[in-house]
Length: 98
Image (cartoon, one colour):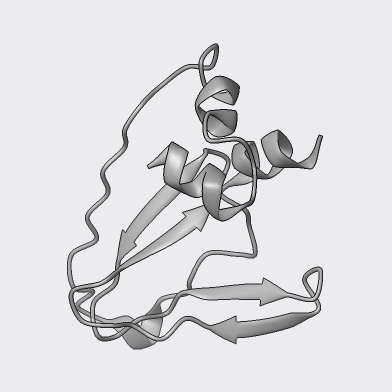
């Protein structure tokens, strides 16, 4: 997956793989069950994902938002049944900035 993302960003094929060699590797799986009182809950505050890649399988309720224009415009990421959202995190951003 890192090779495909590297090529999609017009980097050398091994760029992201090399950037991840010396970092602590982990896989985290979260599952959020249906909320019994969604009208009483708040979402997360504005944040970035610290890792390299986040794969998100949304339900049809959705709720994921992202920014464009350097954080000036918020857009809602519409759920697509059976599709994953691929989010490039902070580590990927730093690795491709230099």
